[in-house]
Length: 259
Length: 281
Ligand SMILES: Nc1ncnc2c1ncn2[C@@H]1O[C@H](COP(=O)(O)OP(=O)(O)OP(=O)(O)O)[C@@H](O)[C@H]1O
Ligand SMILES: [Mg+2]
Image (cartoon, rainbow over all chains, first blue to last red; front, side):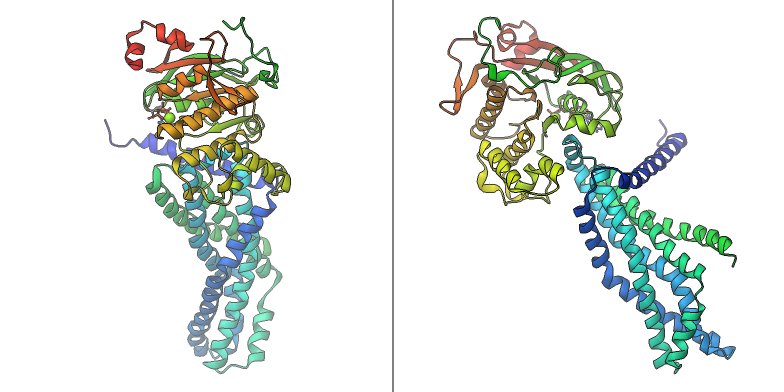
């Protein structure tokens, strides 16, 4: 008997993708159905939004600061140090704000969702819920997905602002730039397309984080070890998907806004 | 037997379709890496209690999960309260499941909710909030299992037997037409087991619920078949008239994926099947 067969593995992978797509789709269509769990959504929004605030602020600030630091040496060579604000603002808003926020929240909340739902799965609590006529995709998944999408949107904005502040602190204190100039170039650099891109991405990342976390949790099997495995896989899958989808969304939006 | 003394009118369950059985299995098969159930057929008439027995791992839990539609059979038909569930989509099953109560083998209480929230789960589902009326009904259900004082505790703070009783309270709170009990006395001491069996007998005789009960304790099965609940004394009493009164309790024995026995306690005691004789001894 072969230890593993390629067709079996391929079949499992296809099934996993199919199950994930179904769950992800249902989590969105549930928004338009009944019942809606507002209390659960609020609770999740609190845990994802408020709970992630400290790490998002910290990463945002230092990313902005290091951006200013790194670009300043290059810019100085061309004598255009005054463009620091523009560079920080474009990189933060278009890329780093959304992506870093996504990755941080993925590490924090995809794992949390996978382990919470996974524990419920292996202790039959999911079955108990279904047996009482409650749809876990409505009760557990949709509130998490909605809360993540909304919260990531706001967290990214906060991350962008804090990042710009980080860049400003470096420019002002270390590089001796004029504060007014920094903020003006930072502000003027942004076009509609940049802001649109910067606000689209976090919503998509929020969807990825929560749907992946819930999917791995709900498909956990094999006791505590299975829950641990589901948790790790959820973080890895969510992080990779964020980076991959970031590339494609960037390409798509660049096409639309003609960069 | 049943013609002699049909018990009081109170036993008439609020059935959707009285003619049809509450649960009907027709040639149901399921297997995982190995076949587990090999085409079993039986029916649970309204108001009857079927006690499912068999060795560990014969698929008793699977029968209950199949009846709830938590799993899909590989072949065969399952009809519950007049609806065929084998072809139903998961979304449509939720409405049907609300009419059925299930007590899981490991209780399966929500460990991050208090006892009150656990028991109120189905009711809060309808209103979204814990109202005074729900609180009163929770207390009533907990009083039924004699655990009123635990409302604010978490499941982890209860003993195994208490958890089992909370699970029973959670299953009965909406007065379901059908209740599925999975080994409600498994691994418990005789005193606690008797308390739980008394509760189940009370549910059977006071509300006339149809139920499917899995147990591996023979003693529980025979207690259920020989006792009825006396509401005046508020306790379970032996039926004095020696099997004249029909307690609507039948036994079902599973072995190697087949039903090898179906009938009353008396039939079982009279059986000549060597396996059943050994099981009884
Ligand atoms: N989800 C599952 N995946 C794989 N095999 C399963 C699954 N559920 C049950 N089985 C198998 O089906 C068989 C019957 O399991 P079931 O839980 O119904 O036994 P049981 O009769 O309830 O036993 P016990 O009295 O110990 O509770 C077992 O051999 C078990 O290995
Ligand atoms: Mg079992």
